[in-house]
Structure formats: C-alpha cells, structure tokens
Image (cartoon, rainbow, N blue to C red; front, top):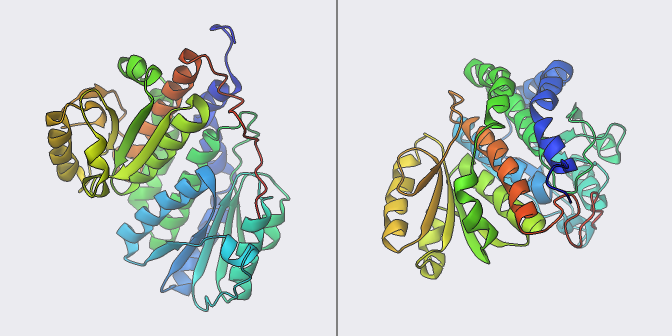
Length: 343
C-alpha cells in the first residue's frame, strides 16, 4: 500500500469525532431511556455480553459502573448458553450486550437467554435491524456508520461512550454526561497527537505488554488486540497489579511496555510500577503523566472516565502506522473477517 494512500482504518479513525457527535445527537433519548430503566430496576448485579473489541468496551463499562455504583458487573461467557445450553437465572438483574454487527449467533442467543431468565436487557448495536435488537428490551443505536476495516476503531469508541451515557443517565451523573458532550472536540485534538517516538520500538517488537488499571486496563486490552490483529505483534494486556503476579519475570532490557495511565486514583500505583519496570530495563512508553519512560502526548478531557478514550484515539492512529511500517495492510488482518459469527 503506497504511503500516500489512506487505509480504511485511518479514515475510520479520523471519523471518530463525527461518529460520536451522531451518537449523542441521534441516540440521546434511547440512552436516557435505558439509564432510567436501570435506575428504576435497581439491579443487584449487571452482566455483560460481548466478544472481541466489544468485550473490551464491556470491560470499560464494568470498571466505570462498579466505581460509580458499587454494583458488581460480570462478563458472561456466551458459550454457556450457545454450546452448553445452560438456563440462566437472572431475575431482577440487568444485561448489557455490545455488538458492532448484532449478528453473531452466540451473542444473540445469550442476550435472549438472559431476557428469558428474568433480566432487563439492553443492546448497544451499530447495524440497524440486526437480530440482537429483537432480544433487547432497550436498544441504543450506535450510529457509528459502516466500518470497512476489519479492526474496529470508531465503533469501539462510540460503544464505550454509549455505555457511559447510559451509566450517566442511570446514576444521574451530570458531570459525566457533560464530559461526554465535550469529548468529540477533544477527540479531534487527540487525532493530532504524535506517538512516533514509539514507532521504532513497536516496528521491531516480537512481544510487548500493555498496562493499565480500571478503565485504563480496558483500553490496554483493546490496544493489545490491535497490536496482534493489525501488526502481528504478540502483545499481552495486564492490570498493573496482575503484572507483578508472574508476568513481570519476562521483562528485561529493552522489552517494550505501553502504559495507559489516566490521572485517577490508580495513578500512584502505576507510577510505582513504572519505577520498578524502569529499573529492570524495560522500554516504557507512557500515555499519561508522572511515570518514568518515554511520554506519549495525550489530550486532557477533564474527567477520569473519558480520559482513556482520548488516549486510545491517539493510539489508533499510531498502530495504523505501525502496521504499515511492518509492511502490513491494516485493513485486512491475516485470517480475520469483519463479522465473526461464532456459536
């Protein structure tokens, strides 16, 4: 692919702010209705249903919801229903499914089973008229527009933003809702951030780690997936705490580590971890402030629950460049297709 030619992936990354504006303009009522329903239900537990990048979006929501409400959020394994035929018992609970296509049979069957098991169901889905919508009590159209690139980018950001707006409506959190309204303009700025200081290390990497805590860990997981699927780099995502329970032993001189460190309550622990990794000779690249290593520029959003999304938009532009630098087409990851219909 000639360097002057923009990939579909790069075009779709650039469309992210506009996609988020569409979500906020077109689906505000649906997100409010879903949030109102959760507040009235007052579920003792909420479960999520998703795969791939959508599952990382669900993980982001899990951290945000647990931090904001204290209510446990658990990810359900779709095969429990689609393969093993379990009957779910979710009376009084809520279930949130996230899917770009809304067509994967295991996701559809799991949400339907959650509803049959007594849960109030919410679906965040990008493709109108999908089978997933029929299994949901509340549907939030993501309005991200078509994605041609196999690697999800704008649909991930919009999925997370939609889940956060539902959370803001549920908890009546005006500050979070206001932060989401500001986010499209901030993402425009995030698109301009230059992460090229990390390009040489990523281009030559065979393996690396991505780290974060809380919502930053969900972004680290999404970043690791993008390293794998677009650039064929073996990348593993860890919580800053979990890294110390074994995986840190693989870190030695020059080992690349990408850290997503928003300025929230977890930052001091990440600063301490960064000091330890730096002492082991790791090549640290840091989205955030206060850690040792090479700082990757980020955009401040003014809210800890939206800050990692701005970091991720900057990362998306970077990983598209990494794929090209490694001689790969980021639009056509090896062995993958846009819609993955698992059972």
